[in-house]
Length: 112
Length: 113
Image (cartoon, rainbow over all chains, first blue to last red; front, side):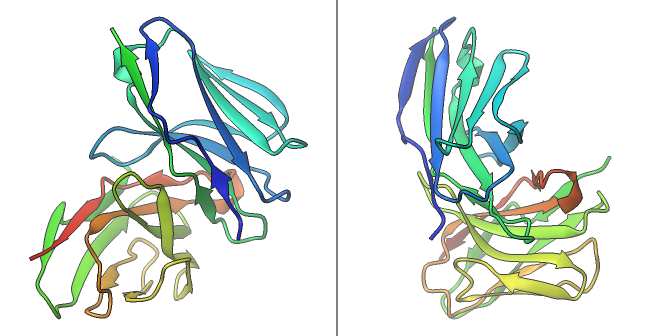
């Protein structure tokens, strides 16, 4: 069974701090990795995608991928109360199916 | 506006009843997916379709059925065989050749009366 693991949290950080969210996956053949943000009662929205080892930055968000360690992370700089949400890590399943495997999500609370 | 439309937003099912959730997309995406989300949980794949007239079971297909007669539409039927249907149902679509990014509709919240 291919798995994606996240700490469910909640992760609590003060406003302006860096929030660090982590994810590990079991499928060594995975090539595509995604972070989705989900506000309570809403559907997930894509915030980052990453396909190669290293860092990818987009505004206040940085995704980090280490395929050797099967580890992907998301850093949120200058955290804002509006960043309070559940962050879902998703990993593309190897094989030509387009299937994503989701972690259970990490709840982030940014306190003013 | 391009997007994925799910309807209804809220749905109530009586005992022994089949209900159908609608998912329509105008993004010209080839692949479509149905997920179920229970409180505090991630998304679990019910069914997916990579092309019209073809679909595959996901991890939790029992008690559900789908059809894919048109590229734009991928309805999900929750049958009476699904004994615990209360959940948030999400439809997604993607173009597999563009990095497998999936985009989601707003979801349907199903409850049992």
